[in-house]
Image (cartoon, rainbow, N blue to C red):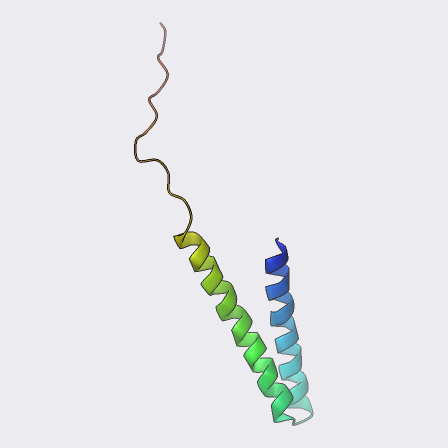
Length: 71
């Protein structure tokens, strides 16, 4: 996994933990920040994954000829 994947995973876990803490102590600010981090990390990861797939270089349009076979 790349550092980007680890950063997204850490943000995802931090958001989940903050949401649980905010719900446990009835603090809407902490819970709201947790939800934003939780959902934001998912959206950010998916959007960059789609961007990488769309900007990936394509294969050449002309196939390379097969090598000649000798009997």
